[in-house]
Structure formats: structure tokens, C-alpha cells
Amino acid sequence: MLKMEEIFPPFGLRIASGAVEMRVLGDEDIPELVELVQGGVQAAGLPMPFLNDWHAQPFAPGSPDGFPTASLAWWWTQRATFAPEDWHMALTVRREGVLVGMQDVHATNFPQTRHIETGSWLGLGHQGQGTGTLMRKLVVGFAFDELGAHSCGSGYIVGNQASAAVSRKTGYVENGRNRIVQRTAQGTCGVDEQRLLVTPQTYLRPDGPVTIQGAGALRRFLAIEGL
Image (cartoon, rainbow, N blue to C red):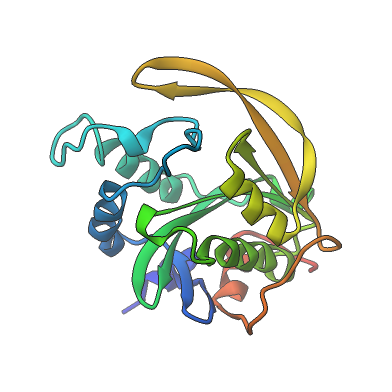
């Protein structure tokens, strides 16, 4: 019988260094992920980091409204629409086997642009321990070394110094500002986003060894050639 990673190669991806391991989100991870979000994501005193306040929605399991229904729809849609010209991967981040956060990777027309976008978050109880920097370094290194990316973009809401520090430690440099819209229970508002870019020339690698599995099958699935 075929294994899931043979049917859908992103499930076979594993990126690890030290105590941290990242894999594409599977259904078996979702209950633990929901519990992590319930423990809090947004640090006090920092601006809301997302476009939508999904992490602050009313907890309503089994209901069509609230969390986690909308988030489930987003995670499952990523699989259903996965294609070489437009793909998202939601990577679970585990430290010593415990789910501590998520690292998102997205690309549009990657075979032509060789550019990816990243986003990430950690549960409140796991922030400030160096995990955020390591997981970002791992996914950027994966993009450069295994996918042949030429650049990785990211951004943070102006005032989010924790996110700024992680980006700086990974080698991102400032790349202009955008005015974007955030949607919350109180309505919509405009905020300033600091855009960032990291290239192989500015990238700062992790200190320890890195192990990556499943990259070859993923490249074939994404029609990536000529690293």
C-alpha cells in the first residue's frame, strides 16, 4: 500500500536541527495545534502580527463559526490547491517532540521567480528561547539549498521588535514599507508593514548541523529543475 508521502510528497518533508524539527501539518497534528493556539500566540505589548485575528476568534469547536473552523478550512485548502504555480506549506515546529509553533512557506510561479515568502508564529510559552530564529533559519536555508530560491521575503508590523530581531538574526534586510489592512473583531484598520528580503549573500546559517529529508520528491512534485 502506498504511504501518504508517496501520494502527497510534501508530507515526506522533514527539516531538523538540534531539538527542532519541522514537518508539513497533518491531520494528526491538529488537536495539539488547536490547544497551542488556545494557550495564546500574541505577546502583550506587541502589535497584532497577522492580517486577520484568527488566533483571537471565539473558541467554538464543532461550530461553523469561530476557531478552529476557519483555520481548518485554510489549512485544508492549502492541500487542495497545491500546485507548482501557487503553493503554501504550513510546517509544524516541534521542539523535543512538543508542538511549539508554525512556519509558513508560500510561493507563486516559483519555477520562474525563484522567490518565496515566509511567515511564522510561536505559542506564548515557547517564545524567547531561540526557537523562532532557528526555525526561520532552517526554512530559509531549505529554500536556498533544496529548492534553488534566489530570495526569500517576509514582513512584520512596525513596532513588532521580536519579529524584527528574528529576521535580523537570519540575515533579512529592510526592503521598503507597505500600508496594509488588518481585520479584527473591532473592524478593519490600516497599519504599516516593514518588508524584508534575504538572499544567499546575506543569509546567516544555523550554528549546528541540519538534516533534510524528502526534498527530492518535493522538487519533482513542484516541477523544480536546474538547482
